[in-house]
Image (cartoon, rainbow, N blue to C red):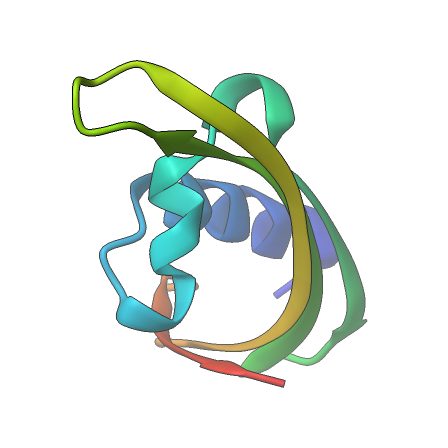
Length: 89
């Protein structure tokens, strides 16, 4: 699988992530503030550096703060190129 196809799968995964490892992605304004770079890519896995702005909410539902977050994930792909699993790297 080429890096461009991996990039599409990674973006889709991060925008829809339900995995607890990637949970904080869900609190970001993902369309505008989610950035990633594929640092290593192989057919079955990729090492991805991720950064985003986490929106911290108050109990009343108002935005209390925004924090820059970053880290690395090792993503594993199934035979169709979709992200199958993620773990912190």
